[in-house]
Length: 249
Ligand code: 13P
Image 1: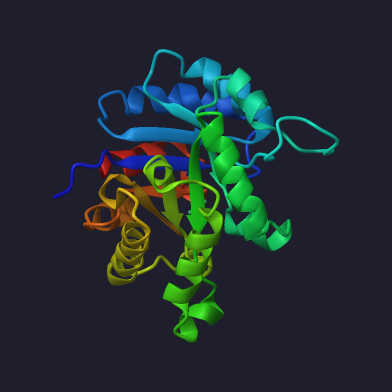
Image 2: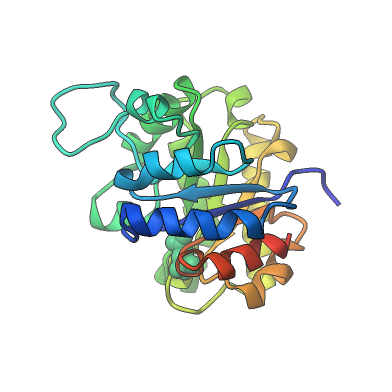
């Protein structure tokens, strides 16, 4: 058994209006009042302030789903670290595969974003994961290692301890095809090895699994030695389902 506090994050993606977000938080809070785990909600930008206010006085943390690396500037449509900090947002998801795939997010930009997030004391939740083609070609570890090296290139080894890593195999996202416990454990242990080889305090880093996590499979995944939590998409939209996943820690 390790001593890392479990970390369960709800990535709502482009779901929930402000009113829907408020309703969710009010329904969730009583259901998770007794948890010892870190619980994080990642709403769209428009609902961040509402979720921050509703969870005040609780242990629930709030994360954005992306941010720009610059503090301000001519970057139409972007949001910066200081803007998130002003709202009392505590963390930020970076490098989700949907952003890499649909918005051409590069590892070079991610390296800058991870450094900027840490500079603003926002906890980065860095997503890595292989495509189905890469897994079939036996390249899973190569992909993970390349992403980790590139995305963490701009921070020093000590700072790596403050990053949360989410292992999200692309083929498991939104498909109902959850990674098997063996696949999830193997990949998360490999990620920890890469961090250790880099000289980081790898035992401190929370490594999450994401990809079709549901109440029915959460306990098995969360019991794995190198899986310290979950990044939940679809099942995080319903307070009862998400609370059931938090309960599985
Ligand atoms: P699903 O849980 O819907 O598969 O999404 C996973 C994910 O992408 C979380 O970031």
